[in-house]
Length: 278
Image (tube, rainbow, N blue to C red):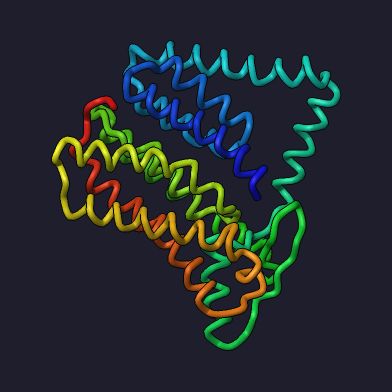
């Protein structure tokens, strides 16, 4: 858990720097940092269409240059350190690894399923494979359906970002990452840290500028509940969640996942007035 978390801290920092650079019109840096983050964990690549939507027309070339340099760096480093054949094998393994994943035990969909069964006095069968715990009772149909929901949500975010592309808003990148984490069939506890620091900065900026609203207060509450629940479940009581030793563990899992969605909604309503660069 801790070694994986340390790895995700690097991904979080790169996403944070990409977000910060985009708000300050440093589109070359934003594209570069995003590609580096995507080279470590593929998921952040969903932010790339968003950057092209948000970047002004006169900044598209700078963004593309940063993306190109990021791709070159991400390709050359593995080739120089591992060689071409080993790098190719690693890519093949990564694609195979992710194509075989099921529904993660921490995911929103597994949490709902676990709650329904626990309320009925039953336990969900779990399985450990691909170095992670999965819900063994949810098959490919749930993976497929959740992926469709995830994609539709992404398209909706892209659309609204395009509609409001003339407004410099801080919310689109963290909102996209929150949706990915909430809707994905695979949700590991450390993924929350990908967007959590950005949300804290947004809240601090709102309070500093005395722009607090009921939505800000709601966002703060959701952040606190999300953070406490995330830490309480993993690493403190993750074994008890897996063993389903009490309804409270399943309830806390669902609370954490729900707060990701609620936080995203509150972020949209509270973020409409923030246009200035951070």
